[in-house]
Image 1 (spheres, rainbow, N blue to C red):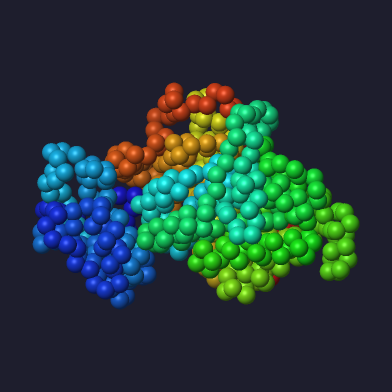
Image 2 (image 1 turned 45 degrees about the vertical axis):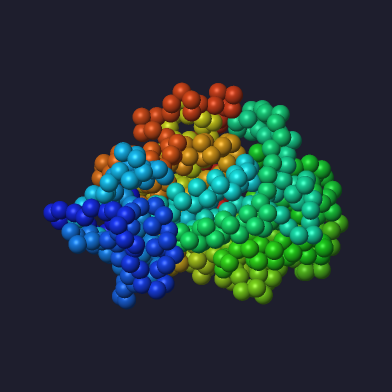
Length: 527
């Protein structure tokens, strides 16, 4: 099973799971019962809440008399049910079971007692739908697969320079203009190649409400991200008055745009209106506002200098911390808190902000010592768009080498923290950036089976056994086959996986780590 449960006691015999009779579930577990009964034969299964178990913990008991799942909350019962699914033959995971018609017979479940609970509260995955749009059905499938691996947070990256993906009342050009670009880069930006094909798409409020509800049924919290004040070229192309007048089209190249939001009052009001709309859709207490990779060059003009003088700031570089504080104040009025990349630590992140630490372990340590909750996601450990091997057949190989073993070795809690500071590391997330992932098939290839390794690294203990994981991964790949996942084979890329017209740009790990140290040198202790 993946992730590996904390305790497994195997017994002789088993239980033949059939469709004779409904699931027995106590009040409060109707949702889990309805979800599970739609996937497997339900007869003989009992679902119960149990005081004394951790909220996401569970006990799964399979005997000759039947199957009982007890959890510390509905989420714990749900995870016990996911473990039950992994005890079944892989073919049982197929949407339409095979082997003799619609009712091929009882499913054998081995007799076992499993006691389990996760190590971290935040076990997340980011999906970038801004660089390449993914239709709603694809996002729902992505959630199903994440939940199958007991991940509980979907960080949905909805906007960027290359596309704005959320409809906002009163701002129609965000989607009529900002959701579409004229072309996309083919491969790494150093090659300056383009495909010449328009790309676009966006989600209505109903689309996003469907995603949120679907995720909630699977005990996944969707944390939206509207990246600001940088990574905003798509919005500025739609409404030039939000910028400095230099960006006239949605960005077609990858990388960091120099065109950022201006700091006029009207632009801040636009940001507040967007966040208000987002808060009506997403119940998550944390709302992502990005804050990463924001060049300050355009702020060294009349508007920026006027704002610097009015607020008593030292210079244009201080405007980002000032901007972030204004957004945090507004979200607090709605009972929400900021979720931002570690760049918001520069100048002092707002009180109560949760930090996504992506530039090595240094920002995670600084944030924890500064009293912020931290989600660890260092790029060289968990950025799943990075290349998986040195095989020339890898599609668009970018970034540093990141194998299944590398992801499995990831430790979310960095060294050097006290026991109290370690409590600030609330978990981790793997990030699926999609500059080079133009289809669901490509997302599958880059995500799995590395996300399987990540799931175990965030669910299980600090000490893990790679050889044991590899032994369990083989049968698990049969489950992914049954679920229709286009994972990367352990043997390497297949000929059809290559993208010869989209060349990559591999990076050396030592060079990247040196670059990260230089990038984070400006961070200082802040509240």
